Image (cartoon, rainbow, N blue to C red):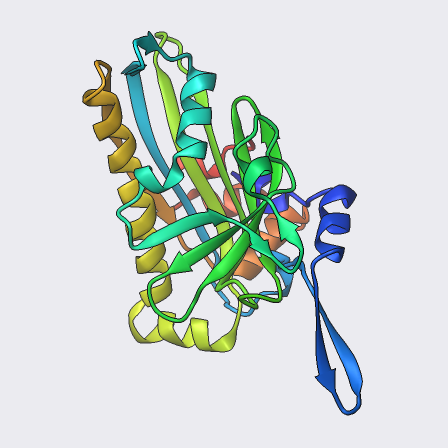
Length: 259
């Protein structure tokens, strides 16, 4: 998971975002609101969220008469993502300011596609698919002209691993910090931003299990792992200033995994 924290999108992702521009009249001139990556290092909150939600799948589901491979199931989850949440937040391929990523997101190579998140309340936001392979993908939070800042800054992976007994673990794992001071204030007052995200990924986890078990497969929930240490401590570990053992006393082992 520390690799999730350290991951930086490549130049092709930056170039894509540079094409997403809104021109705003300002003082007889035009101000350019250009999309950009929200780097976790530039976020506001003093704590960092590190979470891991997973499902162990012993028997993969059957869809349209065919038992899916793990890669096929990963693809199915991605292109049907709104069927794997509780509906409080929806993911829609971006189609604004001359950027239409609907076909790209639903293809077998979604890297660079932007998704708009319709979040209950005022905090709609967007992410970009910054990494992708047949075994999963990564979302990176972005600022963009339609919705402005994402409430958190960081990366979230979706993927699967094969276990020694032939089963598979499908997971999402995220490392992020609250972007702005008001988001951090909400955390201090009632942990609202993190609780809301926990609810989304818990529903994602439950939906995968339910789908598998109702499509002639077999799966079970693995207890979520959540850790919210001080960012400065994590940053020192990432930068090599402190050993990994600095985090290990209270940090779940899965959080400390390098990959």
